[in-house]
Image (spheres, rainbow, N blue to C red):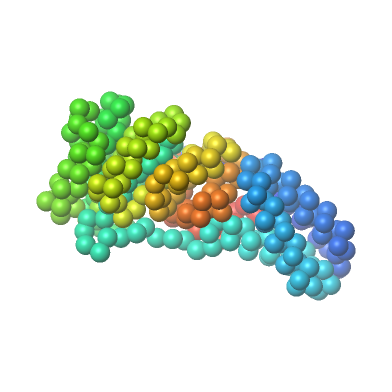
Amino acid sequence: MAFEGLTERLQNAMKKLRGKGKISEADLRETMREIRLALLEADVNFTVVRNFVKTVQDRAKGADVLEGLNPSQQIIKIVDEELTKMMGEEAVPLNKAPKIPTIIMMSGLQGAGKTTTAGKLALKLKDEQNARPLLVADDVYRPAAIDQLQTVGEQIDVPVFQLGTDVDPVEIAKRGVAHAIENHNDYVIIDTAGRLQIDEALMGELKNIESEVKPNEILLVIDSMTGQNAVATAEGFNDALDITGVVLTKLDGDTRGGAALSIRAVTDRPIKFVGQGEKMTDLDVFYPDRMASRILG
Ligand code: GDP
């Protein structure tokens, strides 16, 4: 599972404080040093770690935690609260259009989990809101991508709009939205193309789709297994597009997880969902407080 190493190291760091009636400044410094190393080891972004450690330390000193009752408990509480803040504090819901359809554009690198997440999201909207989503196959560079989306659509019983691979993706997106309006679909989920790395052609195309169909939500799908690259990818997409939410995929895998968790602090974009498996039902709303509790174990 994700975060195993981080959880263990954080617990070890804080175990040493347990049972101490009073904690010296040296004890606090040592604990903070271990927490800092644990976060860095888990791939949390360097600047994010530095700010986090400073805030926890200042709060611990400021609140006279060291002198108070049960100092270790109080420090754990501060770490928990600051981890929650680092990941965004509150769950942020999907944006909704004032008038249907709400247009959701999926973006991200190839293999991040865009197509899978598009399907998972469509199923979630259908199951939880009785919605009638339409999936739009807008990855024209990988012929298998259209088939993949169609298979997903059949599996979850959601229609898929496609025009093959010979039509311009901006045109497909536009006609997909028109099709949704005609058919009274309340959500349009556009599955765009990815590349193995960020390049100008990809970004240019995504920007064109963005300015043409004006999505209410642009979700950036990030593979949490990609370590430090996850942050660089998020920054690259965020510079080019008006990202409104992030989906972290593959959190069921054996990832150190920290890079993904830095994304909110680095890009200031909310993580809205997490993918925790390959099944269509494996998509969950992201709750920063629950994730902090999970990390602290
Ligand atoms: P795309 O190229 O971005 O559209 O990525 P795909 O949707 O094709 O996903 C790439 C691979 O990652 C597929 O094998 C998916 O089954 C897998 N995948 C996607 N999301 C998750 C997840 O949350 N957990 C796991 N374990 N695998 C996932």
